[in-house]
Length: 284
Image (tube, rainbow, N blue to C red; front, side, top):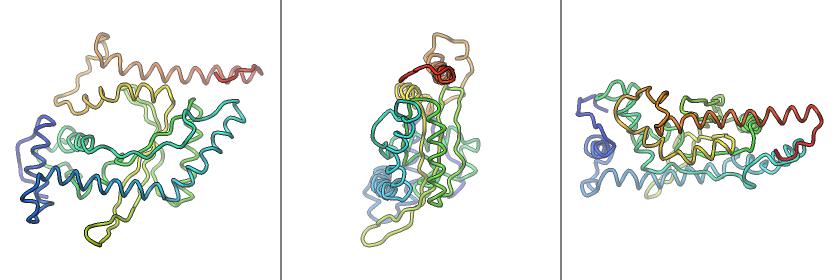
């Protein structure tokens, strides 16, 4: 891709237009593309390809083993603690990142977090030919456990299944952010066979993200997701004033996450103390 200098889009709306006008046409140079919006065409292809990737991963040895063992993890934990491990009784679903969320993320990677702008990032533009293998959460799922010790248990379980299936995933990332976000992330490289029109196939590399978090953090993350998404695509330099601005939404949102992580830890602390003293702590 050319390193040609161009005006930097400052808003998400400007970026979508810039993407359609400047970068995407290079991928769609056939005659049909002359009569299409390149962004709409990219969205159609994205939905088709991600649907196939998700279906392929659902039938993978890794996911089949995890799903088959789900009840076992729950019952084994319950036998030791008198209550279940998971918030939900069935394995989580594999989700596909929406196209709008994908474009938001490429805006951050191509523009907001790109020190080379208006030139391309050091690792190149995030575009349809590479975003499946460069963006780590296009296919993703979230395992929600009731308590903090369940995070460690499932981290070990996922690592063990991945090793047994010869998946070269990176070591789990124990996320603890200033914004109050706490979770463990697994990024699993996966290659699937994608059907192409009319009668062809190709091998497509992608990354599947598995998040593991407690129910307290899942609740607050779900509640504040839209707020964080809007902050991520806001142009301009982030200030540190929110540390002291107790009336701001950012102060409340960020510190609430830290408070809940402390609460998770205190629940575990009380449980362990009661267990040591032989108390019947029940489903605390």
